[in-house]
Length: 296
Image: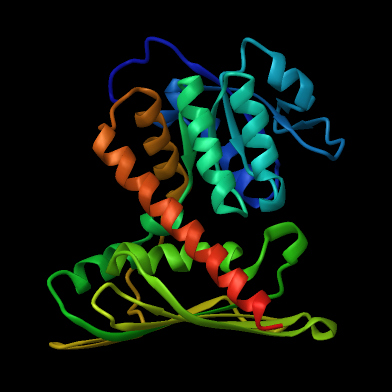
């Protein structure tokens, strides 16, 4: 990717919230992967005009423009599936913030569509590019897990916009699957107090070796964004995360991965393994949602 680009891919950013704004900043900065991308404009439901000299364009123009070859989808999770489908059908490559869909079947369907169209469909997972994850990955290598837990707390999140907690919190599930392999669902509960904007989802999972893992998402007013973990191995324990440094440019690192895919620099084997992991996490998220719904 260090070579001078022979061509640039025209990009639109769909949705200009936190992630979309970071994407626009990275696309406009002089980075190696940004040299392969040309920011054409952004799409938003709000009338915003221009943002930092980047022009707003309509969804219809983004879909029909020959100049636009790539869509970065940074809108609310509930809209991802529809946008992905529209841009793939229009013959564009797609980068989407996680979760790509709020349904396992829809994700499978969209990957088939991307394959038919010969386009890259990339789901962002910046949590796998964090310093904390790199530290954990080194810590668990070669160790035999006995049991573990991961608790995530944060402020309230609207389910209508971001999906059931197992989907909006899928980055935590992705950590567990990436660290300990494919998991199966044992049980799940959801405690909700909608009038207080409070919810707590408790999920009991199991590794292929039948080791228990507990995943808890707790959200409500006054809860600080925090991650608490506890992993017990035959050879010792890891309780909570030490300070392992600042996460720098994680969205840019994800953009680098996407550009490598555009340039055909990922092997079929690597792409298949990533797709398998993403679909497994979406399948688990859906199973958790079904389990909680059946208990209501």
